[in-house]
Length: 223
Image (tube, rainbow, N blue to C red; front, top):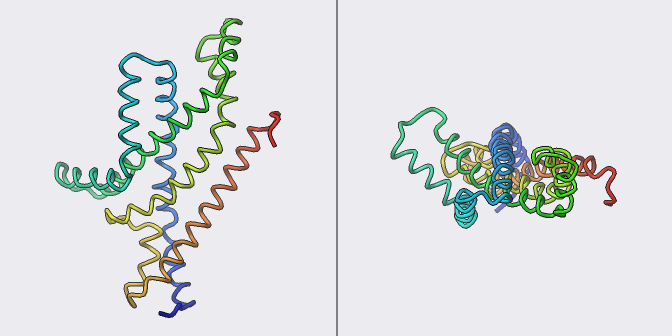
């Protein structure tokens, strides 16, 4: 088996054309996860009767089931129960990935909130602040720097996990890099090209999120 540099470059160019698809599938669920996950975390912290327990069970199920299995279940349900639409596979993938991201990110955010001493909340209540005001002025500014490092790992890992969407026929970086391989049936160059692209995406995301972390850590005794 030989490795062709020219063929590798073709695969690299082909895969790079689908970077926007990978970023879309990776970042949209992240935004959904952060929004819904924050709400779920607050519900569980407040220990809302019934709802808190229901969410705890649902999160446990989602975390315990492999993402690939969840994606396949959703896709088969879509094929069997719903009429085919143009972006059905994409919507199915976004739904499965979003649920996965909600489960993990809600736990990260909940842990970040719980890291704040209760005395901080009590101090806010003692000067007449409402619960939303305590969250906005006291809890959230302290929670964000704590949550960013684990969220960075989750977001970067989530973007890399988008490669599983190839099983439902979505052409992303992995599939795109392998397109030229159909001519020679030599897939090594294609997969190495995909790996290089994923590494580049991950490096950019890690650098950007690190800058955000540094920004929120200003004024804190954190090195």
